[in-house]
Length: 147
Image (tube, rainbow, N blue to C red; front, side):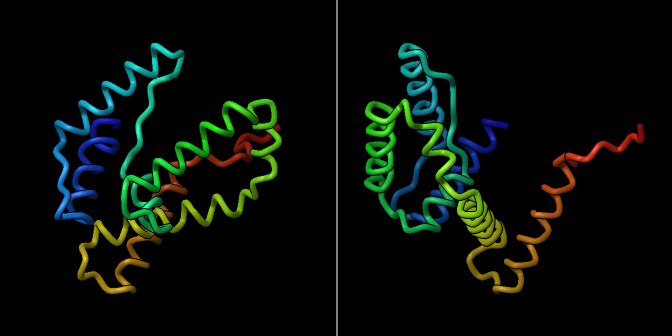
């Protein structure tokens, strides 16, 4: 899953959105490998950033790597100076805002899956199909067995 989402899909998404600045699958794989090895030496856990994260950044205005540098700097400042308050910061962040961010990131991915020439109704239909597919995969919090 990481290979498909974090490397192949991200390369395809980048090359579709920014044809003047293409990236190769090989470059993304090397980047993920090096960063995960460096992170492990610092006590971090392996991670990846998939096409959904890229689509979310693009949807909310990021067009260059500078946006990610700003975000990374902000996260480092929070980690170094506000680490005792991270739990409070998470509770202060409204969950509906996270839902909106994820929703528009999904729409961005659905639009790219339909191609640039897709109509608004096609993008909406594709987004609804993806939402229904995801909701079918998420187990209900209610117990199905009777006491």
